[in-house]
Length: 89
Image (cartoon, rainbow, N blue to C red):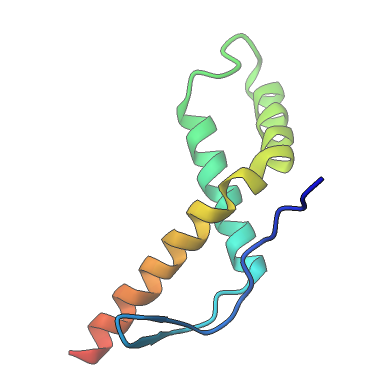
């Protein structure tokens, strides 16, 4: 079985500009945040108490945050590129 690689924090070039390295922990935090926000806004688990729903959401985030690694990395790279664009002006 092929192992899925996670983005590493390393220098990348985009349009001739250096982009600061983004660490794996920062990507994980962002992926977890994206997933938690999506689930909390959704109607998932409507018949559970707020406490039970929160526990279920926490479990889902723990299990499925890796599915959003690529999206989290793109989001962070976009934020870094935006900040670099502001400082270059």
